[in-house]
Image (cartoon, rainbow, N blue to C red):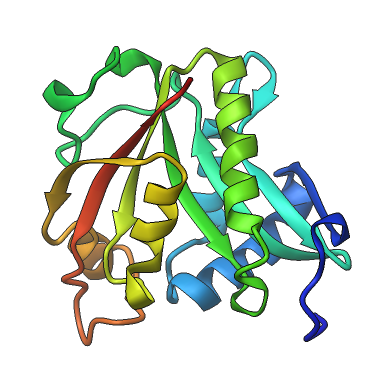
Length: 195
Protein backbone atom coordinates (compact mmCIF):
# COMPACT_ATOMS: atom_id res chain seq x y z
CA UNK A 1 0.00 0.00 0.00
CA UNK A 2 1.29 3.48 -0.86
CA UNK A 3 2.38 5.80 1.95
CA UNK A 4 0.56 8.81 0.41
CA UNK A 5 -2.92 9.33 1.82
CA UNK A 6 -5.62 8.98 -0.81
CA UNK A 7 -8.41 11.38 -1.58
CA UNK A 8 -12.03 10.26 -1.18
CA UNK A 9 -12.22 9.58 -4.93
CA UNK A 10 -9.34 7.08 -4.68
CA UNK A 11 -11.36 4.76 -2.41
CA UNK A 12 -13.92 2.31 -3.78
CA UNK A 13 -16.63 0.80 -1.55
CA UNK A 14 -18.10 -2.58 -2.46
CA UNK A 15 -20.15 -5.26 -0.69
CA UNK A 16 -18.07 -7.83 1.18
CA UNK A 17 -17.61 -10.96 -0.95
CA UNK A 18 -15.60 -14.18 -0.49
CA UNK A 19 -12.79 -12.86 -2.70
CA UNK A 20 -12.15 -10.19 -0.01
CA UNK A 21 -11.83 -12.66 2.87
CA UNK A 22 -8.03 -13.05 2.77
CA UNK A 23 -7.43 -9.29 2.81
CA UNK A 24 -10.02 -8.76 5.56
CA UNK A 25 -8.41 -11.48 7.70
CA UNK A 26 -4.93 -10.02 7.29
CA UNK A 27 -6.02 -6.46 8.06
CA UNK A 28 -8.38 -7.39 10.90
CA UNK A 29 -5.86 -9.53 12.74
CA UNK A 30 -3.04 -7.00 12.23
CA UNK A 31 -5.07 -4.10 13.61
CA UNK A 32 -7.37 -5.80 16.15
CA UNK A 33 -5.02 -8.53 17.39
CA UNK A 34 -4.18 -12.10 16.39
CA UNK A 35 -7.16 -14.41 16.49
CA UNK A 36 -9.67 -11.59 16.13
CA UNK A 37 -10.93 -13.15 12.90
CA UNK A 38 -10.61 -16.64 11.44
CA UNK A 39 -11.77 -18.03 8.11
CA UNK A 40 -14.61 -19.80 9.94
CA UNK A 41 -15.74 -16.72 11.92
CA UNK A 42 -15.51 -14.45 8.89
CA UNK A 43 -17.58 -16.86 6.78
CA UNK A 44 -20.26 -16.87 9.52
CA UNK A 45 -20.21 -13.08 9.78
CA UNK A 46 -20.48 -12.73 6.02
CA UNK A 47 -23.72 -14.74 5.96
CA UNK A 48 -25.14 -12.75 8.90
CA UNK A 49 -24.86 -9.57 6.85
CA UNK A 50 -27.60 -10.63 4.42
CA UNK A 51 -31.37 -10.00 4.51
CA UNK A 52 -33.74 -9.77 1.51
CA UNK A 53 -30.78 -10.18 -0.87
CA UNK A 54 -29.13 -7.05 0.58
CA UNK A 55 -25.64 -7.24 2.07
CA UNK A 56 -24.89 -4.76 4.89
CA UNK A 57 -21.17 -5.66 5.17
CA UNK A 58 -18.80 -3.59 3.02
CA UNK A 59 -15.11 -3.21 2.25
CA UNK A 60 -13.09 -0.18 1.18
CA UNK A 61 -10.53 -0.74 -1.56
CA UNK A 62 -7.47 1.38 -2.32
CA UNK A 63 -5.25 0.35 -5.22
CA UNK A 64 -7.00 -3.02 -5.22
CA UNK A 65 -6.14 -3.74 -1.57
CA UNK A 66 -8.43 -3.85 1.48
CA UNK A 67 -8.16 -0.41 3.10
CA UNK A 68 -10.96 -1.05 5.59
CA UNK A 69 -14.08 -3.06 6.28
CA UNK A 70 -17.33 -2.91 8.21
CA UNK A 71 -18.98 -6.19 9.21
CA UNK A 72 -22.68 -5.70 9.96
CA UNK A 73 -25.26 -8.31 10.97
CA UNK A 74 -28.74 -7.81 9.55
CA UNK A 75 -31.49 -7.27 12.16
CA UNK A 76 -32.83 -10.77 11.36
CA UNK A 77 -29.46 -12.53 11.65
CA UNK A 78 -28.37 -12.12 15.28
CA UNK A 79 -29.73 -12.36 18.82
CA UNK A 80 -28.95 -10.07 21.77
CA UNK A 81 -26.76 -11.71 24.42
CA UNK A 82 -25.71 -10.97 28.00
CA UNK A 83 -23.78 -7.92 26.78
CA UNK A 84 -26.99 -6.29 25.52
CA UNK A 85 -29.19 -4.07 27.71
CA UNK A 86 -32.34 -4.70 25.67
CA UNK A 87 -34.66 -3.00 28.19
CA UNK A 88 -32.72 0.23 27.61
CA UNK A 89 -33.06 0.18 23.82
CA UNK A 90 -35.38 2.88 22.42
CA UNK A 91 -36.59 0.72 19.50
CA UNK A 92 -38.03 -2.76 18.92
CA UNK A 93 -35.11 -5.18 19.55
CA UNK A 94 -36.10 -7.31 16.56
CA UNK A 95 -35.40 -4.33 14.29
CA UNK A 96 -31.83 -3.63 15.46
CA UNK A 97 -28.86 -4.57 13.28
CA UNK A 98 -25.47 -5.26 14.84
CA UNK A 99 -22.37 -3.33 13.83
CA UNK A 100 -19.93 -6.14 14.57
CA UNK A 101 -16.62 -4.72 13.46
CA UNK A 102 -15.05 -1.71 11.80
CA UNK A 103 -11.39 -1.73 10.88
CA UNK A 104 -9.36 0.73 8.83
CA UNK A 105 -5.73 0.31 7.79
CA UNK A 106 -3.68 2.39 10.24
CA UNK A 107 -1.81 3.96 7.32
CA UNK A 108 -5.10 5.30 5.96
CA UNK A 109 -6.84 6.44 9.11
CA UNK A 110 -8.06 10.02 8.98
CA UNK A 111 -9.25 9.70 5.37
CA UNK A 112 -12.93 9.26 6.29
CA UNK A 113 -13.01 5.55 5.44
CA UNK A 114 -14.54 4.42 8.74
CA UNK A 115 -17.30 7.02 8.64
CA UNK A 116 -18.11 6.24 5.01
CA UNK A 117 -18.29 2.50 5.76
CA UNK A 118 -20.66 3.19 8.66
CA UNK A 119 -22.79 5.43 6.44
CA UNK A 120 -23.08 2.71 3.79
CA UNK A 121 -23.80 -0.02 6.37
CA UNK A 122 -26.50 2.15 7.93
CA UNK A 123 -28.15 2.73 4.56
CA UNK A 124 -28.09 -1.00 3.73
CA UNK A 125 -29.41 -1.93 7.19
CA UNK A 126 -32.28 0.52 6.74
CA UNK A 127 -33.05 -1.05 3.35
CA UNK A 128 -33.14 -4.41 5.16
CA UNK A 129 -35.72 -3.03 7.61
CA UNK A 130 -33.60 -2.07 10.64
CA UNK A 131 -34.57 0.92 12.79
CA UNK A 132 -31.26 1.17 14.65
CA UNK A 133 -27.80 -0.33 14.91
CA UNK A 134 -26.01 -1.58 18.03
CA UNK A 135 -22.27 -1.88 18.56
CA UNK A 136 -19.93 -2.84 21.36
CA UNK A 137 -17.17 -0.28 21.14
CA UNK A 138 -13.66 -1.16 22.29
CA UNK A 139 -12.75 1.34 25.01
CA UNK A 140 -9.13 0.14 24.90
CA UNK A 141 -8.48 1.66 21.48
CA UNK A 142 -5.59 4.15 21.39
CA UNK A 143 -6.84 7.54 22.57
CA UNK A 144 -10.31 5.98 22.87
CA UNK A 145 -10.64 6.68 19.14
CA UNK A 146 -13.31 4.01 18.59
CA UNK A 147 -15.66 5.64 21.10
CA UNK A 148 -15.02 9.12 19.68
CA UNK A 149 -15.59 7.89 16.11
CA UNK A 150 -18.86 6.12 16.92
CA UNK A 151 -20.12 9.07 19.00
CA UNK A 152 -19.27 11.49 16.18
CA UNK A 153 -21.42 9.36 13.88
CA UNK A 154 -24.49 9.48 16.14
CA UNK A 155 -23.81 6.66 18.61
CA UNK A 156 -25.31 7.02 22.10
CA UNK A 157 -23.99 5.15 25.13
CA UNK A 158 -26.40 2.53 26.51
CA UNK A 159 -24.11 0.75 29.04
CA UNK A 160 -20.51 -0.18 29.83
CA UNK A 161 -19.51 -3.84 30.12
CA UNK A 162 -16.34 -4.94 31.93
CA UNK A 163 -14.49 -7.90 30.45
CA UNK A 164 -16.48 -7.86 27.20
CA UNK A 165 -13.76 -9.72 25.25
CA UNK A 166 -12.33 -11.85 28.10
CA UNK A 167 -14.16 -15.01 27.00
CA UNK A 168 -12.80 -14.65 23.45
CA UNK A 169 -9.27 -14.22 24.79
CA UNK A 170 -9.54 -17.32 27.02
CA UNK A 171 -11.47 -19.69 24.76
CA UNK A 172 -11.28 -18.45 21.17
CA UNK A 173 -7.62 -17.53 20.74
CA UNK A 174 -8.14 -13.75 20.68
CA UNK A 175 -4.89 -11.92 21.52
CA UNK A 176 -5.81 -8.40 22.67
CA UNK A 177 -3.28 -5.87 21.37
CA UNK A 178 -3.26 -3.90 24.66
CA UNK A 179 -3.78 -6.40 27.49
CA UNK A 180 -0.99 -8.68 28.68
CA UNK A 181 -2.50 -12.14 29.07
CA UNK A 182 -6.29 -12.30 28.95
CA UNK A 183 -8.26 -9.32 27.69
CA UNK A 184 -9.72 -7.12 30.43
CA UNK A 185 -10.89 -4.32 28.13
CA UNK A 186 -14.19 -2.62 28.76
CA UNK A 187 -16.82 -2.44 26.03
CA UNK A 188 -19.30 0.38 25.51
CA UNK A 189 -22.73 -0.76 24.32
CA UNK A 190 -23.77 1.99 21.93
CA UNK A 191 -26.69 2.52 19.57
CA UNK A 192 -27.42 4.65 16.55
CA UNK A 193 -31.14 5.19 15.95
CA UNK A 194 -31.65 5.65 12.23
CA UNK A 195 -33.36 8.81 10.96
